Amino acid sequence: MAVQKQENLLLSVGANIVVPALLLSKGKDWLPALEAWQILLLSLAFPFAYFFYDLWRRRTTNWISVLGFSGTLLTGGVGLFQLAPIWVAVKEACVPALIAVFFTLFPSERFLLNGQVFHIEKIEALCRERGTRERLSADLKRASYLTVAAFALSAVLNFCLARWIVVTDPAQDLEQFNVELGKMLALSWPVIVIPCMFFMILALCLAVRALRRATGENLENLLKK
Image (cartoon, rainbow, N blue to C red; front, side, top):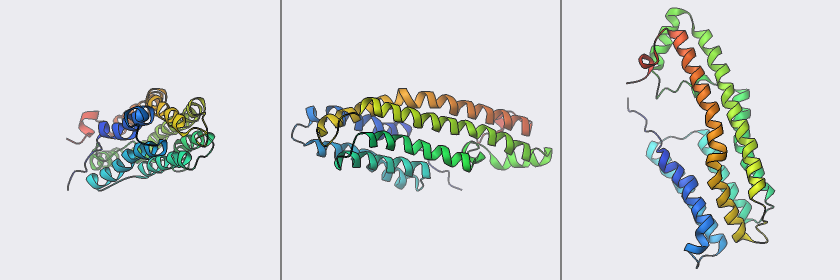
């Protein structure tokens, strides 16, 4: 069986955050011949192209990626259709909020028990031998609620960050709107990603503890080689 390719994290961050943020913030200085709406389109072209490149390279995607891609298009739509800046904040909050609602309604242990990392067949066999499969499912379900907390926190921080930074109506000054959008993207990593990572790491720690308790094995023995 072929091993599924992993996403290139550095390329993803570069195409989805770094390059668009730089273009939006400095595009008018670097590309003075372009209009503000053209710079906005150019900045959106990078996450747009990356989505399809990653889809082609790995031959797979997931609904979280699709939501993120849709959110990128909606952000551009706010500027291009000259909507009120509050819609940027609404859009920024909606994507993580929808993910949080999904995990609340349909908690999935598979989000933590990744088949590309863990030896699922071995874990299942050990749990059957020890009669701990139901206990493991319950523990992983509780751990998955920390991912809900992470996405809920992301929704709140996204909304607050967008409302604080993006205040210019694109119908009045699209160039300034672009600059504010670029600043928001640049700050999204330290302000949003780092706090949310705390909850995600805590969820993974709880999942690992549950696996060790259910299987009686050390973590190293449960990972794929």
